[in-house]
Image 1 (cartoon, protein in one colour):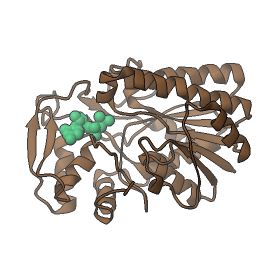
Image 2: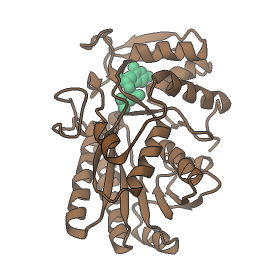
Image 3: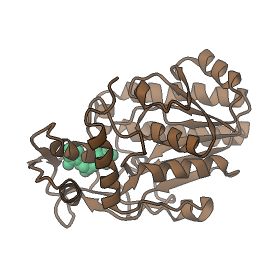
Image 4: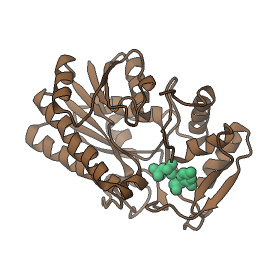
Length: 323
Ligand code: UDP
């Protein structure tokens, strides 16, 4: 089966491509390299440099390789940036994404697997969070993903386009060859590991006055390889639906930093800063639906193995990708 991976040169996309190839799926990566890296594309994949805003190139690529399934990772994904530049998020994540769905309908694609996010929920009514919770995003990033979720439902109803949408909690860790390298890094684990790599003197804690056991935000960290597994299961399933993906276990920012200290053996210096805008205090997934309906079984659920995997990759590639 041929799989078309939009955004396959980014962090989660590159690890998913590696897993698809390990499972013998033929894989076509379509990426504009705005966030992704050419060297993050597994050499076993076919690479097309292209943009979602280019419907002709999308159609031509899907037809040329006779793809059956699309996995769609190609989106902007920073909460803070979306609060400053909402147009960038709605234009790419919604408007450009429509070109991909229209091409999928035109080419008779069997299934679209979509990267959504727990940010579609906003401040959750309760944790752990299952799929029945109210979705009330508090930033343009979450709103753009929620809009695309609705569009998927309408395309399913009207065009019979099947979809599986995964709402990721906090992706972390690495694959065998590919890992997390953002040109501007805002995520907690890579920023803490930068201190262990001696690329920075200290890491920052954004907010120490949250209503949690140690005052810092709680998140549910999920291994990127477990996310990749879910995509393969979602792609093969005949059903359409939404699934929350996390481990059901929340860790505070301080607990993450302590785990990084333990794994790296480095005393990591910390600076306490004010809250970052738009951060809910606690986000923890209830992923029982994905386990029950898709047979998803995370292989690396504990924080220590997730951090160890990230550290292993960052130690092997301390400067990330060269491009
Ligand atoms: N965070 C932090 N210092 C950092 C980066 C993040 O204290 O250098 C906090 C952030 O405020 C949030 C948690 O760590 O509470 C996870 O943030 P991240 O950006 O990794 O993921 P998000 O939950 O925003 O998707």
